[in-house]
Length: 365
Figure 1 (cartoon, rainbow, N blue to C red):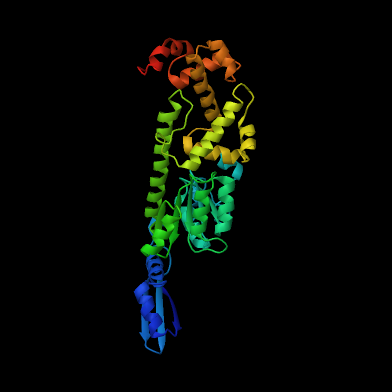
Figure 2 (spheres, rainbow, N blue to C red; figure 1 turned 120 degrees about the horizontal axis):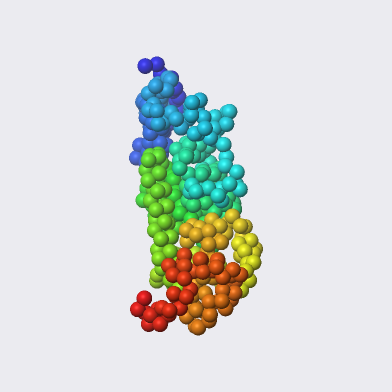
């Protein structure tokens, strides 16, 4: 099979050569990349003379399996399935459409453009992917778009991955976002530092894309379990309360939800209170509010506001208010619509709920 040969020489002091062999600085990564391309690398060295590295790569693409080729080459017969433009680059999804997408939003922060592209193409079409070429840009996009998960390199200009992760985990609006750190520094010391910054996972380079995808799925599945727990412990109960003993969320997320609940309570009788007003009072954009509440609860902000109204209605009914009085006190103008929402929430209409109030109060239901 024809090969492309590439070689270079470099004077390598004996001490440096020993360190390279001991720590594998760059050499393990180079070897892995060459082998991924079905090639080989050989090294020849003479003390005090220097070293020669020979890389052999097969020509063509027949040695790659179809599932790898489809990530890099456009198939004319399947042009609608892969979002490439005429220059075979992935087409960006407009930011205004990200909020409506059912796919998880992944932010890839990496100063190497080839690695960013490789990850992005490997995650398509199951994820919406946005990119940042350094930690500072990654932090700005995180604050603006509130991704579902962040994949970040560690060594980057302007802001490294450790500091990016630490900042994300310390800010109320972003603390819930899982962070996966990627680094060629595979020693335990660096992994410990990564986890100390709040990282949810740490993967050493070179990495398997299958491993990365598995870690992403695992972190997103964990979030879905929290959302289901939230639904069982908060949404389905008639109390308006966030209890850390019942809900597996961190204190910043709990604090954020308590602010949201307090705002709904403040405007509980106003039928026109909207998501736009809430985002204005919280000093966040509508997209930021949507993605934050959706990530924690699994609900949209509109549904979240309606849930608080209906739960407060249940408490008023327990105190003896009539169904009609309660309807208007919690911001509903249409009695029929209120009944529909109440039944959807608790599985019974308000009148049936009132009949069971003694049982509810005594803990029998």
